[in-house]
Image (cartoon, rainbow, N blue to C red; front, side, top):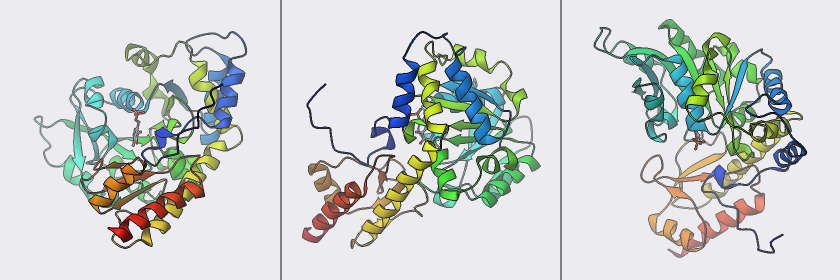
Length: 351
Ligand SMILES: *Cc1c(COP(=O)(O)O)cnc(C)c1O
């Protein structure tokens, strides 16, 4: 064992955090002996069954390495190359996946929608669908929603239903990027089924990496027909893990007794505490309603630099140029938040 002091917990990304105890314990257990490879193992079966229990639905589940592949492959499964996907202009699939959705879908185009606070304005769906209706326009096929959104807001149940209603009106399928789905469920305190298939979501990319596992996201098809040959798509896309049990076992640790929601609640609660701390500092502006585990704030640029010099890591300009993004993780503590806010407050006062 190393005696090195662990590095300070940071607010740069929920991906900076380590592996939570429940996921780690399941990995250890899965490491006890030999198991069948490529997903035909008992852990993967158990994890998929637990996901079906959580959603109270006989859905099809596939584990892939990361969120980009989950989004890209699932969108590719819904689209022909001449189709288009409607998404928010700040959507991860648009701004943070290096064109992977278009690549895996062989050219399906993303059509960008506006809306305040990172949420799609429902009227934008009609506008995008009817911008043109002839053969020269990429045929609208899918609406993609991010829940929780890229700026830390959460679509309410009513908002999801309204957006899905619009999508259905125009014959669109519905994809949900749930890299932070746990944070959204925890924030809304609703049944996962209500937020997804009961509202009309066809496929969910269910993230768990940002909530405490090492690697591996689940693609959950509520409409099983859409999952036809998805196993081949995963394999071709380099997403079929040979030692699949190490992707799937942590999910059993997260889901079997609600650790996924406890950790999401912790991260969400710390974001609220951080918001409160920052609101007390003059010259600091909170950019969006804080509804999940992220706080976006406008900080004086000189202070951003000084915070970095004090060893705090966070990104500025990921979403819009002048906003700093502060993400809380499953292991963020009140002391971490208070130390960050205290340093920020002190630097603002002396600047
Ligand atoms: C992190 C994230 C993803 C997944 O990203 P990967 O780095 O590919 O795992 C997808 N969507 C959103 C909204 C995210 O924040």
